[in-house]
Image (spheres, one colour):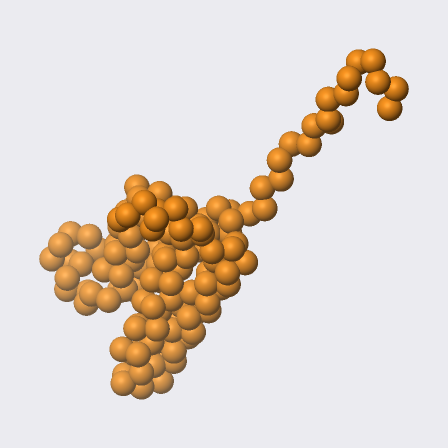
Length: 149
């Protein structure tokens, strides 16, 4: 990366917050489509819903990175998201064979959804926190000891 690219100004915080909202809306829309597809046995809908949800996560992660999220925290959030995806997408036999089964299939599925939802909320919260308006401490201007004003 050249020095000119590193000195590139960051987008305004309103733009970053808009990206964050787009990410959470896409994730929620994908989650609703997934539940509709599974609940009404419209299984052709599920891959599209999963793709939309993953796109929402990627946009939220990109937003948090634009806001200044560190690499270590990004890796930690990615690990939590990956564990959530494992619990949501793998069949019950995989949990039993790996020794990571929590309880019943439904409980394991809900734990995975909870982990994924937690990472989404954390990413959006961090993006908003890192782009908050920073008000500096206001100090009174120094006056000359001999001035009358």
